Length: 476
Image 1 (cartoon, rainbow, N blue to C red):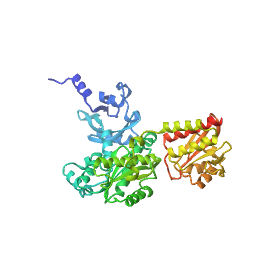
Image 2: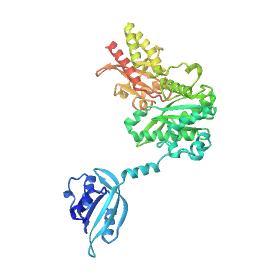
Image 3: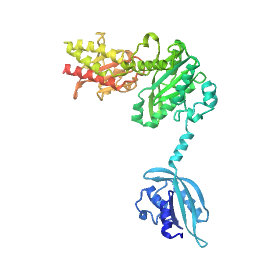
Image 4: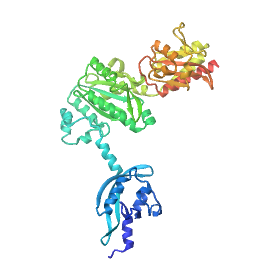
């Protein structure tokens, strides 16, 4: 079958690579269909007779120009990497170009390129991949020694964090139980991780996960391994610390050294405060089989979350054996709000209402104290009637209905009077809610937490906001 011009055009237009040809002045003469689709053009009219510089495709057009000048001088180029702009996005391409001859004279050039952006990104991601364990690190454990004869390290390690992947951290724990090797099983849940993803993006969340995983792997090196349970939850197998006091020291160092948790991590130009809630139980002291052991660490994790997060809980038979995880996990916001309504309806005076509400709020939110700031900006205590402190600059801080922070840093900046009082009262993490209706402010409620760097939760906001509205209704 003889090739004709129409058939040649069809072949060019069905090619997956972007193909183009130019005259000796580097001006476009023609392109194929893949080229038009790559740049989003409907026809060749927008580029015929123009150069790359005219089209504005390159942040730095000079390398492309020199490349084409060499081709027009008789040199062919093969798979040259470069970048071009497509609809405002920089793409990676690989291009090949050859001169076009008419007799002995070069009258132009023909070229082709393919988009390798995703390939390059995967390559860069792999080059930057975090790997926290070597084959030698893992082979000292009999389970991994056998496993690595059958599977690759790429499969064993989590692709993002470089720690042990979910399936193998579980199997490692089960293998230790099968061989009757004592160990402490720890689960760590990063606090407010969803908020980091929602507010700063998943890349920032990934950086947090990678950093915490790296620090934990380094912290446990020599006596344990770290694995990824899923999402923002990590698992630690600690073969060293089996007694209560040893576990306590392990957690105290983990939380207080400012390298793993309770630290500010700079990611994507943001300063992210990173904390976590942890729980643990030990085989065989706390449980004799895997299912029971995992149930115990689940209980301690939820117990920590119920205490306000940013803390650790060590399983003990007396405190946690009869704990109902379903009861802890289910939200108690409705029951608390219902209890507040009953309190306000069951007491006549506002003072009695607040005293009763204080007891309920302290139990529900696990706070150390609840203060009231009246309309004259005087802070008072329900337990100590002699406490009356001027916090008249509280309005500078309360530009919205609710203010919450894990430190007093912003309070010190905005309201030095309030800062002095809270500091003297040993308040480290305040939750402040305006009592009022519309533009009118009738006072403020201050939930005081003496434990440093507590992370307040949205359901806690809702409860205290509801209490503030009840107070506003009684006062107005």
